[in-house]
Image (cartoon, rainbow, N blue to C red):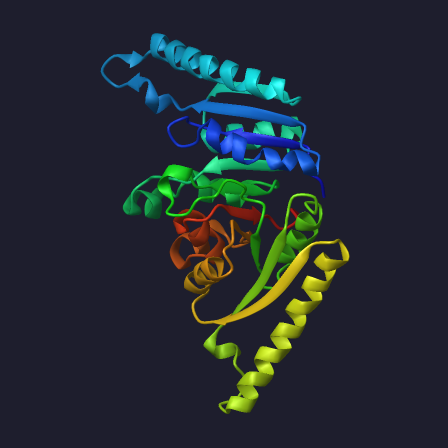
Length: 291
């Protein structure tokens, strides 16, 4: 799959033009059109004592428009097409609508900065978008909020495999980025219950079987000219995926996104959601096929 059209979601204070620039290596994977969207949520300018404030909406629209004009001129000079949406409404609904209208191949959004309790009861925009979007979503961590320097996030992705349809779909998605990706780490986290038997020999047999499956995925990438290496970790998936990203000097974490229901995901959690919300690494979530 190629990435030709990218939808970049910004509230400006979370993601700026430096993030856009770091994604321009995707032009080697056929990116030629970037669409910006700024969603003005009504609670930003509606005050209970004075009611709906049209003047505040206009101010926010014009401030966004000025910023987008500057960004667009820069991208025009680099030969890219640019589109802009400045809309009032619900962030997730408007982003999904724009992604469908623009036939976007990738949505880029900053991670939520809601508090723990707020996320628990109302959920985050990112979680809701991941649950509803049929388009892959890159949860981008602003360069200033990470302890790592990532100028080319697609250069060395770490693909966390759980053998779900979504993670297998991620393999095909990454194959389309062969002109951008230098090396892919392919890893799986085996839980304690996955280790068959109590002897060292039995445990090593499980590790070798898992490594063989991962090697088959690596062979798919290497057939496309992408260097790939397999890794097996044992323990809690959230912690081990983050550890593997550090060990492999990854620039991004890639996972198949959860197909769990909203209720199950909110109360029992999911590894893709946790990594997307908490990891310092940009996180690319590939959704399962919508039925």
